[in-house]
Image 1 (cartoon, rainbow, N blue to C red):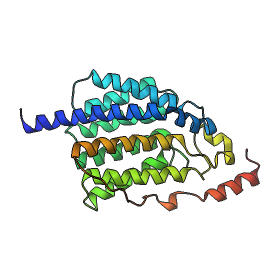
Image 2: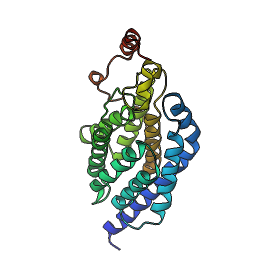
Image 3: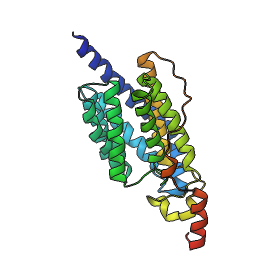
Image 4: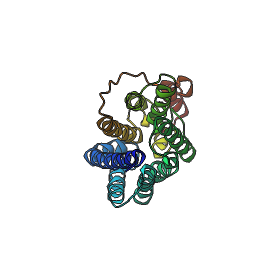
Length: 250
């Protein structure tokens, strides 16, 4: 067996394990995500994500192929099993970004994958940082990952650790924001003070990816990065509150 073939098989094994690990985490966090979504949404994010990744787990276990095929299979399963806007956002974006992994998982291909995934989520969700959506975690994570590899010359696992830290700060950042997209935006200033469920589930996905990547790289990761959020892209949440109250927004 050639080394390249062996590498692809190891990468496929890692992708299957990542899907299984994420599915287990979302099953554990289903109630918490539902509680978060109950405050500002449809109260179904936890159930949707759990159902979607349980379906994805069944399908990747039945599928042969390399990393790109397995990631695309995961995306297809999410689109078919997750209701509302989350299916196309999480699943459709995975399907499109999977094309970047056709030649296997490398530092360069994972940067391209992350950027393609982010671009697709932005296009489909028509949102940006500061709107109180999953992008508040995803955007700083992707920017941090890219910078860590291309500028700071980090190993991919170390870069992913910094991305997880950036996503974690992004999740915290959503709490004081007023929602501008989705069902939460109907609440106006009353959405302030609640952590966004989409940003939270995005963090969980990245944390589990880091665990699996660390195991396969046999590495130890120190998470100490600063969040790479562009302050200029985010309005003052306190100003939002005052504006909403002045307008009589509910």
